[in-house]
Length: 322
Image 1 (cartoon, one colour):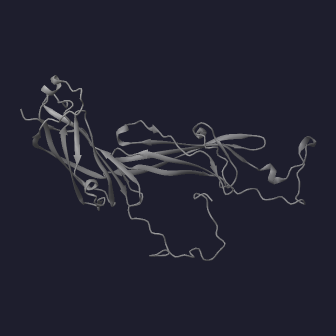
Image 2: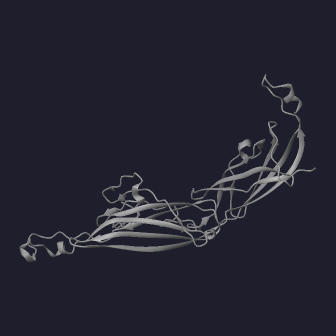
Image 3: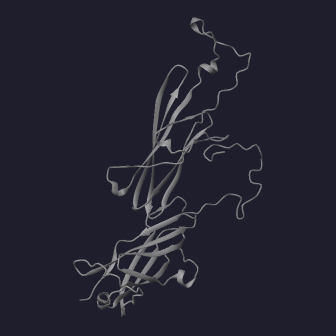
């Protein structure tokens, strides 16, 4: 039974196994909130809610058709068919101006009480689906949220309404608006450390010329402060650096110590630290103003509903003393 279809229960007791806290299912108070770094997901359902035509008894009155055609029952004359049902979706973001982004939907197929007839081959974006009374067409929206502000999801449903003798195309459109909020505030600080000696080459073919150019390797301590600015509890899954060529780093956080993954309640802060150093194989690039670019910091987490989130900072670095 698809979740979008109404389910009529004949039993009087609809909760035979009561929930632990209350017989009514409780959702988190912030259920439905959207945050930057997470994926907005929802199911779009187009239901054919027209009840199926009643069975016509054998003794039903028939209506003679002109021209001597076979007689028809009144129910047969009024029967309508829903063909070529399509669902399309577009998203408008704060930074898109007046343009909208067309979304790729999935899965493909029709679900009904007796099982759907979808083939699941990805043709649902261009091919319509015929729906019998009581069936539903479902599509899933997945959209990565990258901006704070007002988002508008526009959903268009089109279908062909046919009878035995004629038909017409119908279309309706609905708009769903939601606010995307910030999830994490990231603050970083870079401090220089004492230089290390040159890294020894273990390859036997290392030339004397290469050895003569060895120099001391510079090091820096990079601290990152992660503040949960959302309304949900989150568990940090991974905090890692994606460095530029010529650099490497040592992780000084919970994965190294074997500690549990940090859990951040709204407003709480987690301190992270990395030791960044030159790998000795090449010199890291510098800007025109003498700034060494380290790379980006990536943060992954899960919300209390299990949703995954991921954020990456801009290019991080530090100025080199001359």
